[in-house]
Each structure stands twice: as structure tokens, then as C-alpha cells.
Image (cartoon, rainbow, N blue to C red; front, side, top):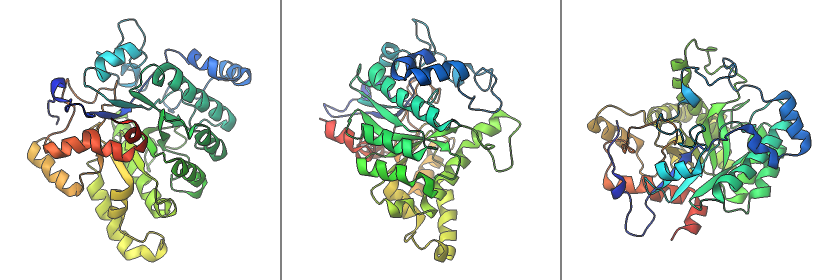
Length: 373
């Protein structure tokens, strides 16, 4: 389902060639947060720890047989530590190997997001932001950080955005896809407002604090069901943002769906638009079709690619997408989403490849545009 793109073909003269919108750094240990936390919260972390992010987890990755949460087997640094913990090895395997001009960091755990203790969640999120700068962005100018926010504590989340709003090392504001309430609900609007004021997109990554089952029918029996259900979470997330009127209220806001898959989008929008036409009196603030709203406000990363098995079918899918502006390049490093140099799905024209690799990310992330040659 991927096409081979040798590293030698990634550079385009002296212009930007590749912007990776989903890179996962990892802490060697939670002790790396200590310099960025007050004594009170560091002592709290040592005493109580963090709640496990999945109901099935008991002190090990979920599932247990999947080392380090699905990392590439070749991504274990030679100096030791888990995949994603070594900046020199990330340079070798990702930034240099694929000629990455910018990589956007999306730390996942321990991020503090969604923790039941709202003040502790804010403290861990703030420490993560400082850790990203000190250990990654300040050591390699190609890397950009995410503003991790304690989104279940909107007041603290807004404060964190405004603290870093002027810092060009941050690219977007990071959410997980399964929040305590549907993401378009009014409780989250102050966060969207602060992000829009700062000119920052909202990045929504697959994941959850697992306050609720991962499916509408309860907890699944198998990890396969759990993983496949990620797409359904993004569908509901997108519907909520549209139907609650987030994009009408904040017309300059951009949202990036990270590690969401994207082949589900056309059918979901067809269905949502059909019912919007018949029920628009219920949500009069949605004054145009959901398909149009998504073209203006929503972007999706290409990995993991859940596309059809041949190029002709994939081209049909791209026709159904009905826009060359929706997809952003990503590797999901160091997770294993493609083999070798097969970094892009099949059936893409040269022009669309250029848009996915550079033009669409630059238009989505204006701060990268400011820094680009």
C-alpha cells in the first residue's frame, strides 16, 4: 500500500522538501521531568504516580506482546533506551535519512493529559513542554514542539497556550482524540479561542485517558478491535467540531487529525452532509456543507495509511477526497507504519506528492512558513 521513495529523491533543489507532521519523542525515564516540575508536584508524582492510560494495562505496554507500544524493531538506539529516546539516532534514522526539513514532535506519555487530578495534569503537561524544548527543539533546529495542554482543565490549558504563544519553537496545540466529552462541546471552546488567537492549529492525536470504553458498545475483547476503533473516534470528533459550531465560532482555526487514517473521510462526510441537509434547522450556525467546512479547516496525516491494496483503487479514493489540500506528510516515527523507504501511498501524482510533503504542511503551520527559506 506504499510506494518507494528513495532518500536521494526527497530533496528538491534548495527548497524545503519534506515536513514530517507526526514524530514521537520519548523520555528515557519519568525522571527527565524533574527539572521542570516544582517540588510539590515532583513529590506527588513519586508518591502517587500516574494512572495507567488503559483499563487493561498493568505496568506494561498494551498489548504486552507489542514491545514499547508498537515501535519499529530497528529503532532501538545503539546506546540503549527505547525507540524515540535518542536524538542522535532520530537524526540518523529519520531527519537525515529522509531529508526532513521540519519534524513536529507529538509526545504521548507521560504527558499528563486527561489525568483525573486537574492540577497535577497541568503540572505534568507544562513540564513536558519544557522538556521538548530543552531536550529536542533546542538541540536540533529542524524539530518543532507541541504545546501539550491539560484539556480537561480549560483554564490551565489556556494559560499554557498563552505562556508559549509567542514561542516559534511550538507548532500546534496537542489533544488526544478521546476526550471526556465530545470535543466540540463548549467546555473546550476557551482552548480553541486561545489557539486561534495565537495562530496555532489544534493537533488531535489518536489516544485517550480511557475514561470511557473505546467503542459505543463497551470495551472490546481484543486489541485488534481497539486499534480499529481509533478511526471511529476521529469520525465522532470531527462531527462534534462541525455540528457544535466550532469552525463558525473560530473561522481561522485549523485542526489536524494525527494518526487517524484518512480513507474513512469521504464516506463519513457524505453521510454527515446528507443529514445536515435535512436537519440543518437544528444547527443553523452550520451554514454550509460539512464537506466544505472540512476543506477549509481540517487536515489529516498520511500515516498510518489504511488505503486499498492497489494503485487504481487508491486513485479512485483520492478522487473521492475531492481536494489536494487535505493530506499532510507524516512518518509516525518511531512507530512502524511502513516498510523501508515506502513512505507514501500509491496512486499519487507528482503534484500531489509535492503538496503532501511541503505545500500543505506550510499552509497549515504558518510558523514554518515564516522560517522557511
